[in-house]
Amino acid sequence: MKNFRDFLKFLPTVLLAIAIAVVVWIAAVTENDPNETITYNNPVAVRIIGLDPGLLISKQSVNTVTLSISAPRSIHARLENSPELIQAFINLSGREEGSFSVTPQVNLAIRPAKVTKLTPQTIDVSLEKLASTEYEIALRQTGSLPIGFETGNAEMNAQNARISGPVSQVSKVSQVVALLDITNLSSNLTRTINLHALDNRGVEVTGINIDFLGTFYTTSV
Image (cartoon, rainbow, N blue to C red; front, side, top):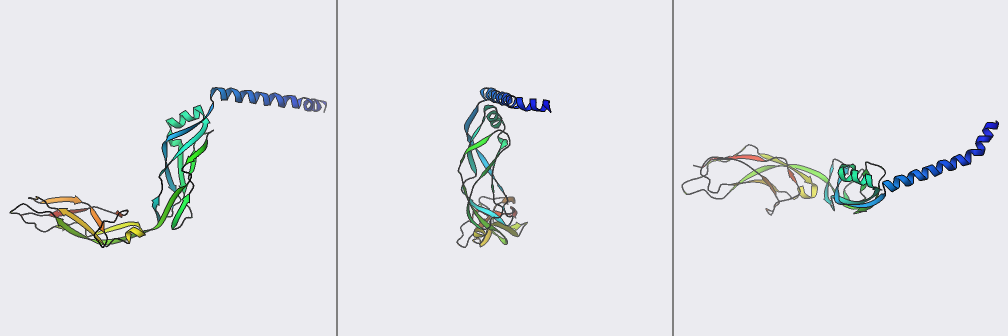
């Protein structure tokens, strides 16, 4: 019991000594590896997580963010050498159709480090339902053959194309065409060409996907 009372008597002194030692250690570490705030000029790509598979992003104000980070000098050196330690993302879990301003989040896979500034602070995102449909491919030939040649039958190895994308864009499509240029053609031709989705005015619709390229065959005689 007497030993315990003696221990309690000296406990404040022991605690004070430990506190002083910790302060001295922190000061020494800080002096050798001072804390700095640095703005990273290289933009960080923003990943998308939690997006409903039945939706897609039709508009996004920015795809990258820039950061200012406060950390010891040694941590900054590692971040510069290993930029993959900095990850930015926006979480779209639970979001439905519409337009939103979402706050990007940053994960620093190293400690101690803290993000002190994030630009931009919000990202504007528009979500639309994903639409998909099929169209029969119309083959159009353009250009003219040299004198003395005429075009034989043109054949396609695929008759239909599937388009997909935001419902607002897919709904504009009225036809899918393949344009085959036969200018100065003087022999049989096998060529892979792109397909084009057009609206009812003949203007190409952008922001959609056509799931394949067609291969077309034509004969000149």
